[in-house]
Structures are given as C-alpha cells and as structure tokens.
Length: 220
Image (tube, rainbow, N blue to C red):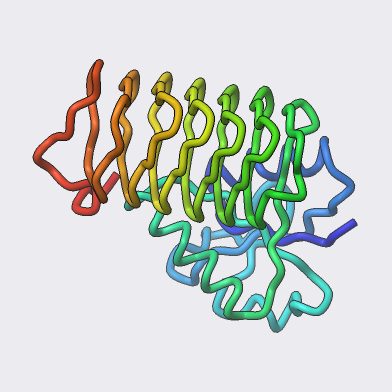
C-alpha cells in the first residue's frame, strides 16, 4: 500500500481519488497543484491541498508517491511537464489499472498510467509512462504505446501498431493493423486510419485524411 498525493483539483483528480479509494489498497493523503492554482480554501475531496513548489517539505519522496492523471491539454504536453517535474523532485509515480479491465501483461505497463474499466489490452502490448486509457478501448496484440498518450473511449487499435508519444485518439476511432502512428498525431472522433501518419498531423474522416493544421499548434 502506498501513501499517494494526487496532482490536480479538477475532474481527473476527483475521479482518480474515487478509483484509488474504491479499487486499490492505496491511501490518498493529499492533493497538490502549482501555487498559482491553489483554491481559496486549501482542501479538495476532504483532503489538504499543498502547493507543488513545497510539497516535498510536507510529504517527502522517501515516504509518499504521486499520481498525476491529467487531461490531454496541449496534446498531452502539459501532463508530460507535470510528470517530469514530479520525477525531478524524486517521487515515484503509481499507476492505476482498473480491476474491471482485461489486462494480460500488467508488468509491461509503465508508471503514472490511468487505465479505466472495460479496456482490453491483449498479450504482448507494451505501454509507456504517463498514458491515459479512458473506458472501453481495445489495444491489439504486439502493439507498443509510447509515453504521454491519451485514448478517449471505444478506440480500436488493431494488432502490431506502434503509437508515438503525445498522440491523442478521439472516441470511436479505428486503426488497421500494423500501422505506425507518428508522434503527436491527433486522430479525430470516428476517424478510420488505414495508413501510417505523419508527426503532429490531424486526421479526420473515413478513410482518414490529414488536415492542414498541425496538432502541435492547437491548445487542445
């Protein structure tokens, strides 16, 4: 059992607290945000909120662990920055894998991952650090997911696909087998991807086509 600090005071943090409390042996002891985002009353979900700049003074890394299941803002780059700042302070990050997910090889999943109910992760799938899988996705066998990726819900990733860092998948996206999804790809809701993608491309439609705007430039 770990004593855990959750980063954030919004919906993702509230959900993380819910899942950790009900589906793990971990004990959530506090929340943390950057000083400029501290709430007027330093409390959230009945627990203290501590400025991130000072968190190690109150909760030292030798005794506490972190969890930062944040959203996809700036194509997951904001979550990546927070994760890296937590690691720089010397903390270990836990992962949450729902007991209601089907996961054949959990030892191949990195840290600070948030994997919700009804995901199916087939054998030989490798998942990096700081990855969010919302509810109900299918990750096909022998695939690889790099760091800082987010799947929304009901995405079908067929077997032997490689997904690059900072990629975002919209609801009901479908990807054929054997694809390379380049770093920073934004796969839109309902897109059907049949070919490899290009870095920071935005792909929409069936079959999916690349738009003119780069995902890197979106405050998404």
